[in-house]
Image 1: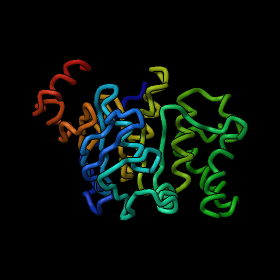
Image 2: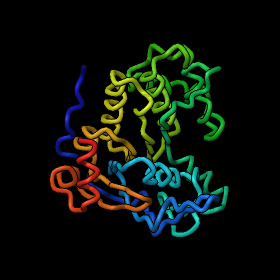
Image 3: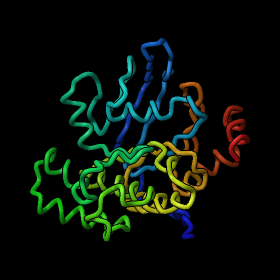
Image 4: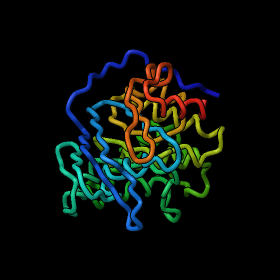
Length: 258
């Protein structure tokens, strides 16, 4: 199996702020307090990995970045656009933010190529010929060019997740969000998806990744965020986070998953 090689000296320096979340609070209708005053800043070109135990709020927090989850107080600004209740603003943010989920969420009745071209033609208003050319290039980039005319049900889980990544990239996003993108895959399929994500990181894509893949976090992340009970417990470069964590909750978490 091909191994993920470390991202050596990253040639990108943090630049403009892509995500600015301040004092974000979220309650569910049943009264559950899911996010408790959460802060996070992500710069252009950064790869930030969010880790934490089940129920810690990490996926909920990630989903606030494109309006899939509402929040009751605090502020979130994505690439200069403030998220709130304005549906037009949420739509504008979603056009700039790609999202890859645990499940692939592909349209089963459309071919791989049609899955990629649907949104750019409808949302971006681009010509089908132009989008098809880009889609084929992206499928080549993620290593499944030969699957373009198949249907999702004819592909393996790893191939379907690579289609999902290519579909998001077809919208030319400025930011990519990944919500445990390998958790639904068989172990032998995980690596092929992580390699695609590694290449995106090398290309300078801004990425926020919720994952339990320790090796990916160690080798690719600029910073690792630990969440627990709806709060950010610790933020640190991966070498510090994994080798000399500062918070007792971080030490406990790492002892349970290492």
